[in-house]
Length: 233
Ligand SMILES: C[S@@+](CC[C@H](N)C(=O)[O-])C[C@H]1O[C@@H](n2cnc3c(N)ncnc32)[C@H](O)[C@@H]1O
Image (cartoon, rainbow, N blue to C red; front, top):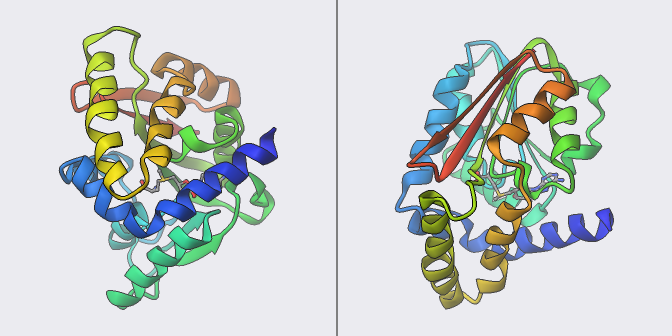
């Protein structure tokens, strides 16, 4: 079952990779850039620190963090879908950025003993993992003793709340029809299903506590549409 799900997710992201950035900007009216910047602002990466952008996709967070950690730090972008990672690499080549390390890997299979990051970030990745618990556990194991982590994703709001109704209408009447134009409606219809299977804010907090994080904050942004989870050891 696990194998099937990982393969499916990889297939989805390889297939949409060539339209990923374009559709992200179109479907969020460019707002995803602001939400990602907000996450990075909250995490405050410092000069000289070592960071990882997990499930990096085309690398938006990696590029943002790269500017903050400077030449003495490092940033590694990791994703399991080769096609989408290739887009990230091409973007880096275009802007002559040789600083970011790109790794093609399932993040749940990273060897934690080889890593000791000051910070880990993930946008729209946690919801796509075969297990959210395993994802948060993995992040914990990749951080050093004072490490911190931040996750940005759709907020799974209470059923029939205003933000839940808005989200459902927006996904069904805007996202899916627009992606249909690019023959990607099946792939984008998957977002609603994945949000429904994603833990709510209070459940994410409980998971993080059980994993061992000391500092845990969850906040919603954009009228309850998106959620940001900040964790610290
Ligand atoms: C919705 S995209 C987000 C990409 C990027 N972080 C962003 O915010 O634009 C989710 C990404 O997670 C990656 N992904 C899903 N499961 C993964 C796993 N187990 N290991 C590594 N990457 C994974 C997918 O390949 C995809 O690129």
